[in-house]
Length: 292
Ligand code: BGC
Ligand code: CA
Image (cartoon, rainbow, N blue to C red; front, side, top):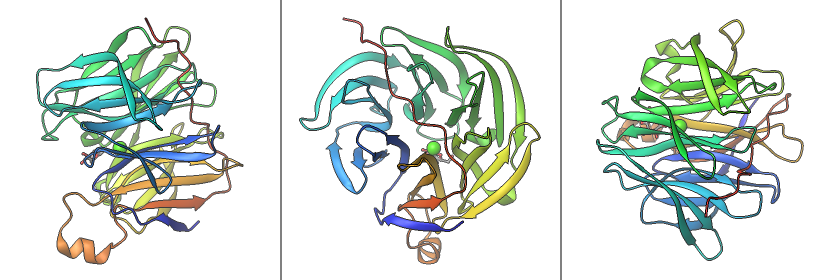
């Protein structure tokens, strides 16, 4: 498998890729540049950090925005007009922002937060059903990859500095998690586990921050199955897309890189595509009605 550059975005912090089946396009964000892209096109330039987003079934996007000082918002965003309406507010006492998030298979939106300094365990993971925001757990340092097993009964989650993938039982009807257990331990030689997605075989594809690769794992055995080199050092997230759902899209970041590493990885901040032999789980849309 070979990574192909699809857009040399030079993103400061490319993140949150999501395949929109309706428009057959890839939405993703540059968190620090406060920008939303569809492919190579900027579709929204915002005033707050945008951590992640999800396409909404009826059109438009649900986006997780933060001021970086503990005030975050889930907003309905119309991409053409950039019109926003706040659906819910999330307040935290530390200087935090939203990071990775996505919809569950029942159309709720789950998103996590992290401290701006990336070291305080001041973040949490939240679930939004259109009416209420529920905190699923707290004490998170860098809330990152999240995904579900093909039968939707298991939820996988990464808090990057733990170097672990945790599995939880997932109650899809109630949106609740239980029974946390570590299923993958990532060695330092691969980088730091960041964004994550799953394929229809139930394997996990994890972007390795600092590792210039995406790694494929079997969460049932904890074994590393495959490594796909990406010509960007800080790979941040990945998602399956394409008309046959076999293309893996990978985001990356330039922030914090040394001059030397930027020379070595000039495409850092780019958006990449890898053709795989598997099919990915679809990106789920936000299907819940908003509370009036
Ligand atoms: C965050 C970055 C962080 C990185 C590595 C990303 O998901 O957005 O701020 O540096 O993970 O932990
Ligand atoms: Ca990430």
